[in-house]
Image (cartoon, rainbow, N blue to C red):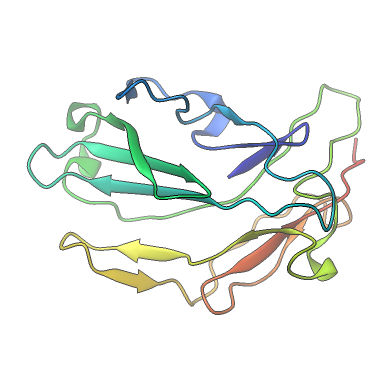
Length: 173
């Protein structure tokens, strides 16, 4: 999940997802803005479910998206786009970022509250899981490497019980 100007985004680094094929009149694709996830701290919490799974028959990598509901297939990356990923993934990463014009302060991430604000007041990743080739889920319980550019503006907690908190007020130049 990525955050920009108060809106969450899914997807690719630098909002560049060449080769992605939308299906079923999908209203969202990797890199698109997800319009207001939540307004202010203590506001209505919205749940976004994202999944990426490899189709056993075609080898295509499908993206599923759900907003407060069951995720549905929105499109896929054809197997032909990949070399090693044609077989399996060997790395997983997730996170958020904010973007600002050069010399302007960064916008808030999530609700604008640093993760020490506690669940219900900050953005969170919950129910973090890996899904194997047979469809079995395994919760992610170990910490993953963290990259935080300016902790006073945006931060993330360690993974605890398959979840972590993130966000911050922004304001960095």
